[in-house]
Every structure is written in C-alpha cells, then in structure tokens.
Length: 223
Image 1 (tube, rainbow, N blue to C red):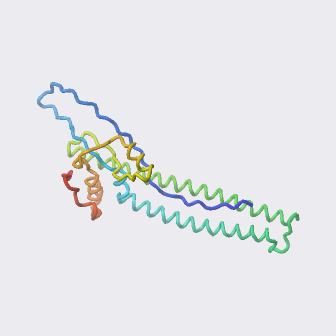
Image 2 (image 1 turned 180 degrees about the horizontal axis):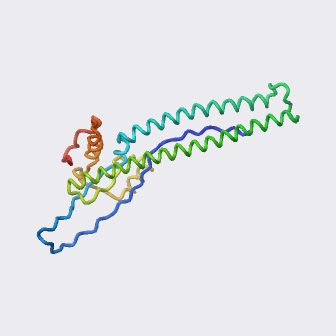
Image 3 (image 1 turned 30 degrees about the horizontal axis):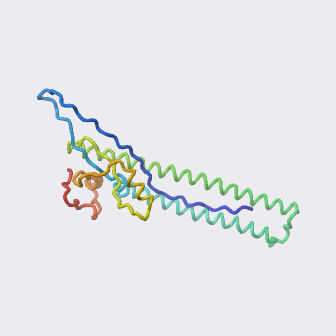
C-alpha cells in the first residue's frame, strides 16, 4: 500500500502589484478658484507593511495555531493507519493470511481509511488556503485605505510599490527579482513605508513597533 504523508501547509506572502505611470499634466488655463492637483509621488514597500500589520500578525498567529493542531491530529491518524498496514503485511494480526477473504477485507478497510485521510487532508488544506487569502485581502484593503488617507493629506498623487531588499550576486533569483522591479531608483525622502506603518498602529491606538518609529536619515516624516 502506498505510504502518504500529511503535507505541511506553508503560509507565505505573495502580492503582485501593478505599477502605473501617471501621464504628464499639460498646463491648462485654470480658473483662479480651481483646486491645484496633487503632483508629488511616493514609494512604499507594501510587503514590509503587510508583515508588520497588527491584523495580519494576529490572524496569521491564530491560523498557524489551527494548522499546528490539525497537523498533530493528522499525524496521529497517519501513524494509526501505517501501524495497521504494517501489522497486516507482517502477519502479526494472526488470523489474516494473504489470499484469504479475511485478509482482503482488512486490506480494503485500511485502504478506505487512507482514502478518507487524503480527502480530509485536501479539504483542510483548501480551507487553510482560503483563510490565509482572506487575511491577506483584509490586510491589503486596510493598507490601501491608510495609504489613501496619508497621500490625500500630504498632496501625494501616486504611490508606487517597491521591494526593499539587498540582492545577492550569489543568488540568481534575488538578482532577477531586483532587475524585474520597474522602479530603478528613488530618493529616500519619497519612501513613506514607515509613515504608513505608524499610521496603521496609531489609527488603532497601538504603539508602533519600536524599530519602526525612527525616520530614516534624510527622510521627512509624512503626517
């Protein structure tokens, strides 16, 4: 009988955001009372904000606890099925000899248990994947709303996502990811990542992570 394993569901973050160019605004003769359009641009590492978002961290911790509990339960089920299979194959069951109707009956029972195990595992994996997707969706919607509030208050017309990481020449994947980013360079003063992290926490009456409070050198905090 084929031995199957409970595959650990890995929760990870995969966010793919489009970067859109803002067309140049042609100078127009506007009425003196017309409001000036925002023209500033900003940059943010959405993945970094996501990882530090209190909703994301809390919900991911709860989901991980559920996954760990499920894995323990499935591991016990798997071991029970494997013990039955080994006992049947080794003949330690006593009365179940290969080729007899009794042996075949026990064989079929174990096969059915394994089929149920695999079905339940797939169902649970899908449930966990959907739960993780919902967590990411809710968190991302909150991040976008926060960016909108900060950008509107600061006269920012466009915010572009950019992954802040140091590529490793010895790691082709990291080099490729760095080259795939459409934003090649920006002034550090345009980075509002820490400002958004602060706003996410302040909006909930929470203290921002200590390592995120300080503003990077050369950057003016966005309020």
